[in-house]
Length: 375
Image (cartoon, rainbow, N blue to C red):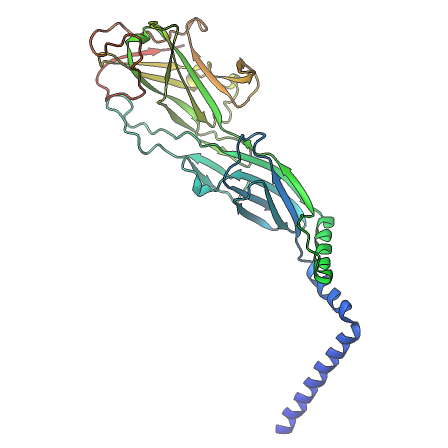
C-alpha cells in the first residue's frame, strides 16, 4: 500500500511540473492575455453620469440617489454626496436610469414605495402630525404635508460592447504600462426637473377690515407621484392653507385679497386638465375669525376654476397646457357667478380697522355662520 501512495504522489508531481512547463512555454504576455480574456465576459463598462441641477431644479442639492434598472442585472443603487458627477460600472445592456435629490431617509414629507420596480415606484405625502384639529371646524380631518423640493431625471441609457471594450483597454494599459485614466469611457448628461407644482390661491374679501385671521383647506389634490411614470397619483388628499397674506386695495381700505401659495403634486392623474373636472372635483373651505372672535365659514366648489398658468416676465397668464403652475381665483369681478366672501361689520375686539393685526393663527372654533356657495 505504501508503494501505491508513493507512485500516486510521483504522478501528481509530474503533472504539476508539466503544467508549469506548458505555461512557461506560452510566455508571460500570452498567459496574462488568456487570464484577461477569461475575465472580459464579466467586465463592466465604466461610464459617468453628469448632472446639471441648476437648469430645471434651481439649486444644487447636498446629495442624490441614482438607480439603474435592467431586466437581466436587476436594480443597482448609488448614493452620493458628489451630485455633479457619478462614475458607475455596468455590464453591457440597456438600462432605465432614475436620479433624484437626497435619499429617501432625508425626506420628511415623502414616503417611498416599490423603488425596485420602476413602473410602480412612487412617493406618497406624509400626514401633518403636529397640527391640532379644531372643534366644530375640521374634526377628524387628516391633512397631507406639502412636498419638499423634489427633482427627478429619467432616461434610458445603453451600455454597448464598445464601452466595455474601451474599459477593458484601460485595464490593460493600467496592468501593463501603469497608465491610470481619470475620465470615464462615456458620459451621460442629465438635468433633473423639479416636479413640485405651486398652487396660488387668491380670494377677494369684502369687509376684510373685520377679519382677525383666516385659515382654510382645499381637497382632492394628488397625494403622491409615480417617479418612474412621471405623473401624479390618482389618489387624493387634503391640503391645509395656513399662511395667508393680506393685500389691501389701498391703505386703510375695507376691502382686499387674501393670498397664499403652497407646494403640491398637482391635480390627481386623470383630472389634470379642465375638461376632466367639474365644480365638485375640488372644494375650497375658508375659516375666518372676525375681530370680535366670532367665526364664519365659507365653502366653494372650485374644480372648474383651477387653471394651469405660465409665468413670463413676472406675469401670469392662463394656459390650456399642463405646466407646473396652478392658480385659483375667487373674485366677483372675474367670475360673475361666484360670490366672494363678504364679512359683516362687527364691533368690539381689535381696534385695528385695516387688518394690520392679521395673523394666520386662529382660536378654537365655536358655533358660527356657514355659507355654502354652489356653482
